[in-house]
Image (cartoon, rainbow, N blue to C red; front, top):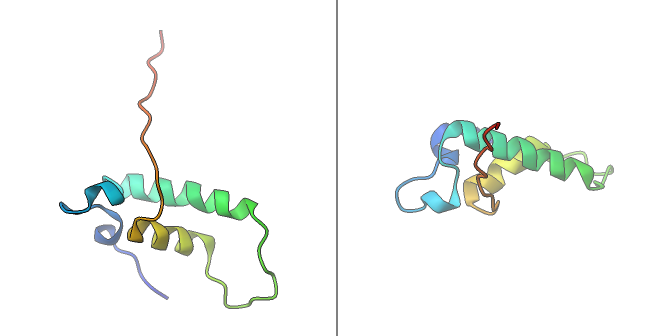
Length: 76
């Protein structure tokens, strides 16, 4: 099993647009993506399938998850 460190998830200077801006945002993005993956049907016959959170962290580390940060609205 691969262990993900904050440096794997956080963007570096050259590829900051492909990864999360900080480790907390990276965890939030991976968790929300895992929830989306959970909605799709999975092959139950496969016993060696990776956990959804691991798949999400891998996809975030490789830069294949596209996301955008929406600023919060202020209460009026």
